[in-house]
Amino acid sequence: TRPIAKVAGGSLAVMGAAAMAVAAAGGIQAADKQGTADDTVASGSDIPLASPLDQQFTDLRAGAEDFADRASRAQTRVALQERQEEIARQQEEERKKREQLRPKYVLPVRPGLSAYFGQAGGRWSNLHTGIDFPVSAGTPVRAVTDGVVRTEWNGAYGNMVILTAPDGTETWYCHLTRAKVVSGPVKAGDVIAYSGNSGNSTGPHLHLEVRPGGGAPINPIPWLRARGLDPT
Image (cartoon, rainbow, N blue to C red):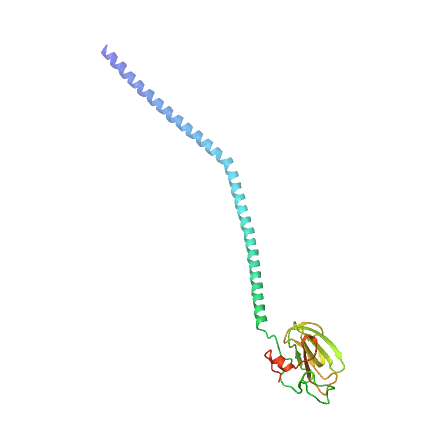
């Protein structure tokens, strides 16, 4: 009876071991199959997912490039506008500086007089109403003040330019060859005419009168000196 029991016990042990091996093998095979199936699913899912992602990336990159290009153009326009505004500001500052520095009163021609205000003589029917500068014909005559000019002809004064300053004072430039500025605004120092010998004149010269408010003439010498100019 014992030998049979041993055989039977050994057979049971062998059969148990075999069963465990088979089960283990089956588990491994199942795991392999599961892994293969997973790989198949994963590799199968890669194909449809790759195209939308690539397209999204391409679209995003194109959008970013377009945005960067538009932003660059906008920045360029802003920079150009700022540069233009800066140039305009600098030009305005320069204009203001020149305006501050430029003379507001100028002698019409070089200093030196041949006749004075109030002087009597056969050359005038009454006392002399201005001062005379002995300059040759064609000498440039400059505006004494800022203002607006107009031109006239007068039998005694000949060709003349009348300049009205902002305060209403008139300066008369007489016996001219011709006017350079017939009418309109001028600044002190602008050439407005050329001296000559027209009208009641005994020779080329410039006759200058100063008339406050456009009224009666006054002595130009103290008026000019009060403004930093000496015509003598």
